[in-house]
Length: 89
Image (cartoon, rainbow, N blue to C red; front, side, top):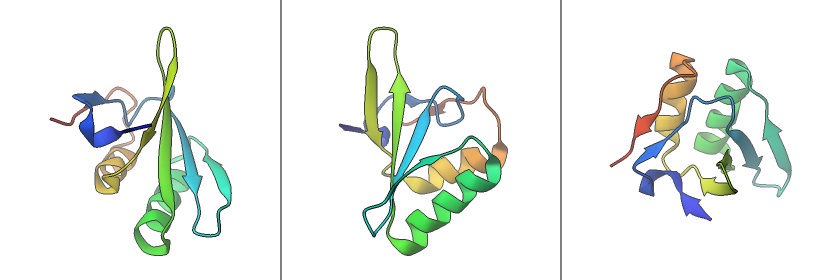
């Protein structure tokens, strides 16, 4: 598993990226591609101790990433733009 912040670019806004939340109670949830659900997941990460992960599908394999800088994720949720790719480095 890698960290999103360590990638040169990360497609936070892409509909192809699947977000997974691990709650403090060890419950696993898939975060649906709706702005309110993504926003709710962000606040659970920020306030309740949940962890957020993403599966980024590639051409030959899919990779798992920890969303280790959640405020950047929130920025993309608020912008709600599927075409934005964040330059991390």
